[in-house]
Amino acid sequence: MTRQSTSRPLAIGALRTRTRLTALTAILCASAALAGCSSGDDSTAAESTAPTLTASAAPVSTAPADPEAAAKETALEVYQSYWGEMQAFYADRDGTSEGLKQYAASEALSVAENAAGRAHARGRVYIGKVTVSQSAVTGTDLDSKTPKVMLSSCLDVSQWQPVVADTRTPVELPANRLTKYLIATTLEKWPQGWRVVRDEPQGKKC
Image 1 (cartoon, rainbow, N blue to C red):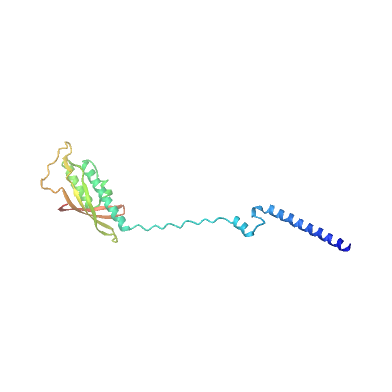
Image 2 (tube, helix red, strand yellow):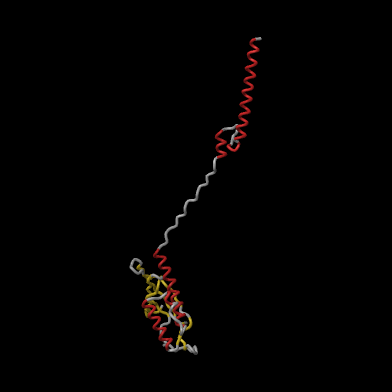
């Protein structure tokens, strides 16, 4: 009898303790559900709630532009635009050289203003088109105080015709004149941009 009365309270106590632990575990799991509480391995829960890391893209490295190549390209473009403005200047008897000044300066600008001025004073204008071809860079001096680019081109003026401004009558020209010839050009980088400063016919066919 004594042995039975002693073991029964112990069994009841153990059952109550186990029941309390089970209830406590349930409460903790319910209150910590967002924290990933589970009866499984803790490491699995930690992995499921860990933030996802996204690798940032590596910066794209761009090679610096080649200053000499850029200067050459700009000089070639300016020379084409220079002749576009030359055509407009020579074709307008009452025009000014303001447009031409965006592409010409120094000696080249003076020669153009004087030659066009003489033609306009005689009642003549130039109509048609000048074709610039075979342009190539023959030298550069970008380290000087005023950077320079030198060009060689083939100038075709066969379709660029002087006419009497009022009647558009063609002006007679020498039969043996060169209409397609080499021309040497120097451009300089001024504060306002690249400018043609010399444009010299070489007296040679191209």
